[in-house]
Amino acid sequence: MNTVLSRANSLFAFSLSVMAALTFGCFITTAFKDRSIPVDIHVSKVMIKNVDDFTGPRERSDLGFVTFDISANLQPIFDWNVKELFLYLTAEYSTKSNALNQVVLWDKIVLRGDNTKLNLKDVKSKYFFFDDGNGLRANKNITLTLSWNVVPNAGILPLVMGSGHKSLAFPETYETSKSY
Amino acid sequence: MLSAFKSIPTYMDYKGQKLAEQIFQGIILVSAVIGFIYGLFIQQFGWTVYIMLAGFTVSCFLTLPPWPMYRKNPLKWQPAVPEASGENRDKPQENQKKKKHK
Image (cartoon, rainbow over all chains, first blue to last red; front, side):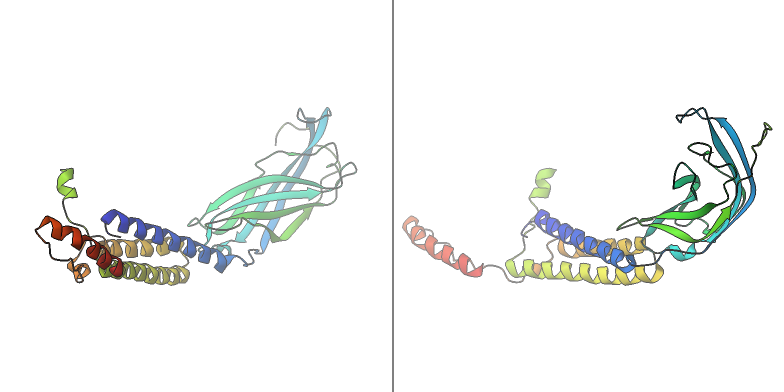
């Protein structure tokens, strides 16, 4: 500690250790928090087509079109340890050939400081709702749920499912018109 | 220009070094506690980091330059003896004195 450099080294190393302890403290204060909130999902339009699917092993697969509304208040999830939320809407169903199918239809990134009241109306799905086969036609029970991935400043990244889901049924016949 | 920097004396005596270490550790710990509580209160971790950095800057200013308060207990050297034979006898005594201070 006789020279400036030696004192500066000691000071800087001590500061970094204290910063690490503070970050751990930040993690500990929010580690066991329940990050689930109620979510409201409505479906306004449901349609199904049978189209060429070049990504699968068969000629034609079912393609679903769902238009939905989402409303949720994300404010309780944000605290000093949350940097952003990655939201995604999943459709879950079972068919004769597969017991469990889960398809992500839409996602959104919500940063800290963004508007946390989610009130979206008439949203079309972002990603194609292809089925592995022809299991969507006349499928009575498709469940839509909104989940999110919490990205923290320090700690683990939990996947949380919102409480509240919407069940919908696909129609019996395919849509043959060209428009969406 | 570098030689001008190197010629500025930056030493502190031993009690001064201990005082400097206590000062900077105290300031940083206090600013860490204040920053943690304030950040927890307003739910923004950014403010905790800013308060810590402010504490770091204050303690840099207080402990890095060799202020006179760190030079209050200088080492007591033996007086220099001009003869050659006298110096050989004095050197082992000087080493002993230095070891006691450490």
